Image (tube, rainbow over all chains, first blue to last red; front, side, top):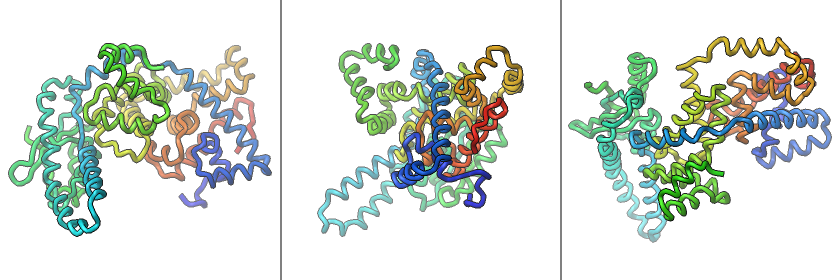
Length: 227
Length: 214
């Protein structure tokens, strides 16, 4: 949105007053507003209005009672059956440990950078396999998933990742889809992934497959898994 | 400060559990850093860390959802879904935003999913309009109170205005954070807030109070 497309009556400093009140503006903008407030009576009036609004919103929210204690009990009872996605966490741990390793080596050791890079490529396939193993480990839990969870985790797809896809690419795609690797790699590098069923049924699954197919830099092949 | 049930549960886990719970949940000075540590622990399956995260955030996230849905029992159901999603997705949290902002984003998505699945009954909207025009003596008295009237107007804002004013005024979110939660560009955050405030002025004007803005 360009300045010309801003709504009628819009004034940048006035528009920023709500964030001036909640204290999240950067120092430069905050000082600009503070300076303008000294001389601009209209801006001071606008600030009063914004403060009234903030007080009203605060009153409304504070009047809402806390959730019932049984909510936590309900959540805790369902935790064991929840399928978890640890893809990015595994990748972050890997990169953090690698960074620590690099930070600890002597400068002349850095000639081995190429070797380390090659190692990362090798580890990539291992991490994807590890993600699959983690999810395989949760297999028995699936047997005890409550009915409502089964209803939202019943789409299984066969996916093959392109050879150049990084672990980070794959992890991001899985998180974007809220999916987890259930099996793989099997012959030909195929993985089975599980994800939430779209609310619009078959149409939604077709749309999901097209969406995954469009990630050509990550995915070489995707198809429904046999039931 | 923390729900009795959570505390009792921690006590039930013995002294070690209690000490660990207090470490996780009451260190206010390092709240933000610890939130991230909690999420990392949750990613490894630490249920006590999960309880501490719930203790820290359930109240505000619940209020955010309640305001979006305007339905107390549905808000508690959606709150459960939000924290279950947090448990499921903890491994994907990268720390690019605060944990509270991450939870707000999940909460809004879950609330919108609920609204798509169970659209609010039309009579709810009509009820709001009727209540507005049919002033009982009580309402008329309230209207003499500008603050009470402003609260009524805030309550009646539409969904897309309600969430932005709540995120800014109550949850203290920056422009960047609101953009992340609502998944809209930064300038749209500013104009949406502008329109929300303009709507409040229009509603107040209809009720006889001219704020002289915008």
